[in-house]
Each structure stands twice: as C-alpha cells, then as structure tokens.
Length: 314
Image (tube, rainbow, N blue to C red; front, top):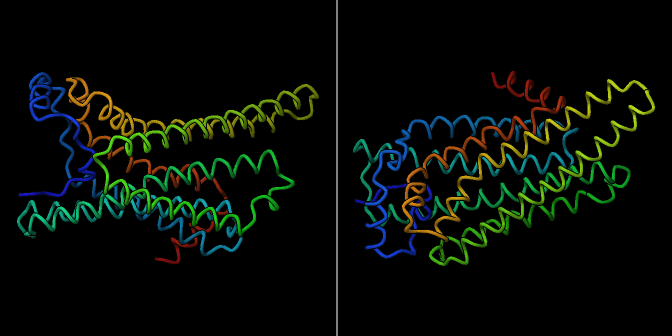
C-alpha cells in the first residue's frame, strides 16, 4: 500500500538502475547507514510550534501600522513561506498518523495525488523562503549603504512587485519541478539557485560587516565614546554571523543530498547519506522555527506588538 512521505520524489535517486541500487544498498549495510527513525510526533510538534510562531509574526505586522513598511512586508512574506512548510508538514503528518493507526483508509492513487500536491507546496515554500531570505539581505544592504535614498529606491510599489514576482516564480517553479522531477536539469537548477542565494547573502553580509568594522575603527581613532559604537557594531556582526550559520546548517544538508542524487546515485557513501533524509527535513522545519527569532524578535517594536497580540488573544 502506498503511504505518504514528505518530499517522496527526492528521497532516493531515480537515475540509477535497480541492480545498481541493490548493490549500493548491500555495500552500505553498516549500522550507521540505517538512518534515523524520527517519530511523526516530532514532525507534528515542530510544525505546530513553527505555525504558531509565524502566525503571531504575521498578526503583529498586520496590527501595527508602524510596521507597514517594505522591510516588514518582506519579513511577513518569509513568515508565510515558513507557514507553508509548517502547514504542509502538519497535514502530511496527520494523514500518516491516521493511516498508520488504521483510522483512515485511502486508495493508493489518491495517496499519490496528495503526495504530489503536498510536495508542490513544500517545494514552493522552499523556493519562496530562499528568495525572501535573499530579498531581506538586499533590503538590509540598501538600508545601510543607501540610507538617504532608501525610500526612493525601495518604494511600496516596487516592494509589492517584488513580492508578487517571488510568489509567482515559486508557484511556477514548484509545478515544473513536480512535473519533470526525473530530469537532472531541474535538480541542477534548484541546486544552482541555492548556491546563488548563499553566495549573494555571504557577499552582502561580508560587505555590511566590513562597513561596520570600518566605522568602528574610525570612531575608535577619534576616541569619541567608542564603547557604544563598538557594542552596536559587535551586535550587528554577531547577528549576521548567526543568520549565515543557521541558514547553512539548516539548508546545507538538504541541498548536499540533492547534489549527491545527481553526482553519485549508486555510491555506497551516498546511499548512506540518503538514509538520513528525514533528519534534513527536520532541519528545514527547525529553520522555520528559528527564522522568527532571528529576523523578527530582535525588533523592539515588533516584540511590543507581539506582546499585545498574545495578551489580547487570552
């Protein structure tokens, strides 16, 4: 009987013959190659936490007019992207639990269609999350290096066009991926997109860090209360380091998995790596949990609004 599985299309390589896959599996029979047995309850719990966090972020941004700016609109879109990950994970996990306990019986063809729809939502959320991470990095770059011209560069109209373009591109690309997932060119495009976003954010953040360091040295040389500026610059540097570190830790293993599917589908080491796919999904969901903490909760205005939203909900 067919069962639901998160991102079933990417769990194992499709570009290897059945005999080669059997040989690779036989050659990778050690204990550490058996993967991790992650309970569905963990997926469910993380999905709920991520959903609640991001719902609160969206509610706070909509509630406070002071947060109605392009920067916070991008953060709101990132929260919605993370919510797509959470909702997709919650729906799929609930169905898996109901089917495992015999509460729900669904025909195999319907299960496959459900899998495709959920996988499309997950792929769309992956592309949109990566895109908005890059957009937020560019927005912060403009804020720092073109502060006086920021409002003329990042107008509300351009922000709306940017957001609409990202959502449209994410929907189209995820549909194409699900339709042509057996084509290596599609996977290479997804891998290339991840690497492009990683390099883009790395370059922008290094440039911003260099500017902060330059200001720190300039202030220190003039000996005008350097402690305050040193604290501010250090805080910014730590924030940028956390952003890149969490991004790479949470997304890196998943995209390394995709690279191995393309480059070495029958290699024993690669086969062992494939068996840890559920762990990579957990890391992606953890990124959806951490995103609000990094991108949003450092804002005092947003923290105050979130406190109001939570208190009003009670």
